[in-house]
Length: 380
Ligand SMILES: *Cc1c(COP(=O)(O)O)cnc(C)c1O
View: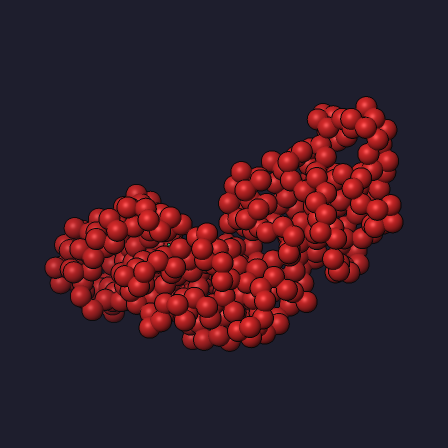
């Protein structure tokens, strides 16, 4: 497999903005006529919110979701005004004036967030825009549907808050047949009945691949934009991320030699090992000690021993002697090994692998247009 040359970096993270744009188009077509927003919280799942949001703007996306006010500020500074930015976690007390002056839309999740926003509106003397989250059965954030009913009947609430969105979040969209999906839908419909005319949103990536009943006016995909299928059969998405690590050293170890911290790995027979310049400080999960693998020329090269902070060791005995040299790159995420595979072997989810990759990699952004017929997984 061709490697990317990254002088002076031990690792290379390639992010394909063209694939993100193609994934956005795929979801937008699926859920039309509903609007397709984009969740770019946590720096767009670690991939760079400014770059990702700019690419999505070019596809016509005008609605973005972040988790926190500081993320909203950074996003607006990067992409300018003209888009709607929702703050999913709502506001910490004292942040209301800043949010209002920047024109962000907070998601009001609790009675106290509602009260603080109403007080800010009274100070401003005008209704302030907000989204209202209803907890339809995830027990995480949001008010009960009955409270939404009480608010709808409260005339001073209407004078203070201009409701732009009624939203909820679904707990089990990765399992389309899970009974919680229908139960949450029913509770959300109850809340909507109190607030006719307010645009509604329920679907994350998984929900976008459920039936149109779940799409309402606006969908909020995150992980699917980044190429991770939210359900097993949602494999129409293009992979977005590749990660390669450089071989720092190659050595032959005799039988009986211990490898890495704690000598968890002991060579049972003579082995050829390569040490890679990536470790858990680069977000490569320490749970992959003696479990995961790197890939080269279609060959699986198992990790030998514990993963260190800045390096790990793989067994390259299966490769021809001249197949790989010090300074070469091997694949950790790419055509041979998906994020989902890595996550599965590490006992976690692709979301966590992505968001923990961190800042130490050389980042290469590519933006290649996808036509409808281009094969997924083929990158520059
Ligand atoms: C993170 C988040 C999303 C996006 O979820 P994905 O599974 O990444 O698509 C949507 N809505 C809310 C409320 C979220 O917190």
